[in-house]
Length: 196
Length: 327
Image (cartoon, rainbow over all chains, first blue to last red; front, side, top):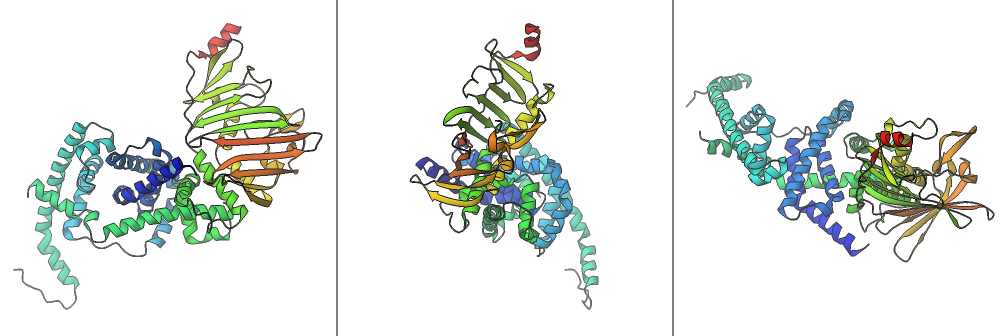
């Protein structure tokens, strides 16, 4: 093996070690299922390997990986083959995911509810900033738009998230007494506790 | 609640902020790595053929996922080639497994781009030669054997779905358009030819040949490469590609007509596959015939995943204009 090939492989290993947790996390919330996410991560790094010579250095490589992951997941969703394999995959996923996911806290449940009510574009730009820690310029690199556009989208997404989240919080607070009463009723033998 | 508080709630819900996230993300990354390596090892050990092991839950899941979700097996193998570099021992127990794995890895490397130089000799003299360069869907074919240079069809290009043919009559290029729209009335259509070449530059032909090798022996070369030798039925190398004069025509990979034993699907031809130290196939040599009529067919692979895209020729004339000019 030539020194050039060894160097290429060293670079790839370093890239995988440095950024695979980031790409795993990103694909985790972007993909439709855990197995789709795993496939997407694999595809992203395969693409990185093929195009290693064209890959930017440093932090720009991270942005490149995010942008590639975004395209890979978009392709997954477009793929007609995915529909064909759906039943098989669901059955297999059910077998693999033996343990139920941990229950989210009430606040987390509301955050997820709010995210679900946002438009896809708002949700994406918001989570790239708040969960992935990307700057507007980096988000622009992922989305393929101008930094100023990304900044504007992020601003609007934050504002919309706040509106939806506050609305959900207000409804949740209003529903709390009824929810508590329901919880107590479902627990046999529990005495009804007066609210403080 | 102000924006800052709502964003704080959002940030608290970040999966990354959870205890154990780093470990679980790392585990997921390791799972991806293991998935790709295992998939390649399985393919190498069973040749991709359906069998009882495929019914086991995990391999089926991996293979089904790889095959149906865009992570092609060939692409998976490329990653595996990287991740298993320098440690071919445990995964490759036999010469058969080694040569099959080499085919898988080479197909993966060739998926994006590459160059194949084909040479056929008869009794030690060059009989035909073709150089094929490809990058994604783009392709350049140059037939450069004796007597071919300057003849019609000696050079063709496919760039962005458009076929260009070199026209020796006026020394320029003709833009023939979509290969699928061209019907030459007889013989192989450009679309059929390109489909066959696409199979040859991809993994199908390589796998068919290496899967069919019997009586395998191997020898190490000084440069770190290994030559695997064996016999392959001619029918696995030269495929039937039409009928001429009532006789089936069998064509070698990359489009040359097979002669003598190579045209007999049951005949056993001697095949030598040279695999570089990096696990990628460098050369395939097929020999057949007798001392009176000895044939050698060689494919040399180079610049896999590193071949530049062919460029559309400047000033190419539309086919309609060319036909009008010759009418």
